[in-house]
Amino acid sequence: MPELPEVEVTRRGIAHLVGRRITAVSVREPRLRWPVPATVGALAGTTVRGISRRGKYLLIDCGSGHLILHLGMSGSLRFVVPGTAPQKHDHVDLVFAENVLRLRDPRRFGALLWTDAAPESHPLLAHLGVEPLSRDFDARRLHALARGRRTAIKQLLMDGRSVVGVGNIYASEALFLARIRPRTAAYRLSFEQCARLVDAIKRTLRSAIRAGGSSLRDFVGSDGELGSFQTRYHVYDRTELPCRRCRAPIRRIVQGQRASFYCPGCQK
DNA sequence: CTGGTCACCTGGAAGC
DNA sequence: TGCTTCCAGGTGACCA
Image 1 (cartoon, helix red, strand yellow):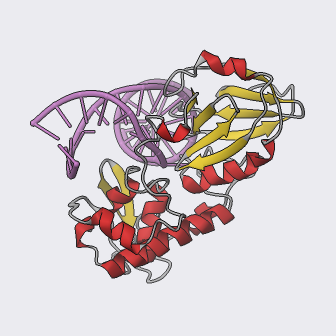
Image 2 (cartoon, chains in turn orange, yellow, cyan):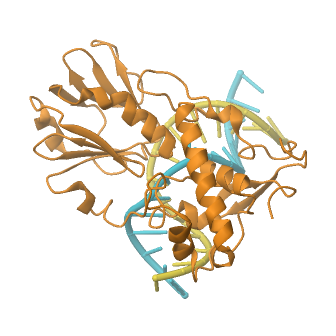
């Protein structure tokens, strides 16, 4: 999926919808991770008040409530001109006067929900951890999160209750930059290592956003542009290829049923 | 609480 | 060419 950078690229791409009026909502396939509620059909005529991101969730403020959108593993949002025929996995349209915002999600692990209440108190968002690009995320904070945790640092980073938005790609990439092996027990990280890791996470996410995210197969920005960060991976999906820094072959291991990648020469 | 496993779904690539 | 198997950017639910 879309991890934080891809969701943020999407948010920036649709931010100009604020102030514009939804003329219709079309749900062709409501069977996403949870059924798309029929109430979203009643949004026709409402004006978008704001668009924000929390972790990997996009929040669209419609005044009367919020749309909560998650792109799952294969989701993307893009603008199409009115009248464009929907393709096989184009499940939902938000129709505006000038164009149509279309949700595509082949695997249907994504979600489109509605809440009348404060979105941050929604059950899916209420227990989310710290935003990695915020000032709240610093060495002290990560060190506190890691204290007493025997779990591997990579799995801690990917647990949204600790830190949001860091998924399988960027966890491996950030650990490479920080020179820490993914299997290191979280509680064993020194304060100095936490400082390096925080810095590496912020730098990785920011450069990925600048590159338009990663496009492995499905992801496109709202303008249809592919991201290019996948060309800059140091370790992700580079099993047996030489490390860009030390030439040692990159290793692939499995943690929590997810692939992890690291350089045995650069990461200790 | 923690840590481990399974489930959801489609499609592309690799193997035979 | 076609069938089978494995793998993929996430994360909630369930178990010990």
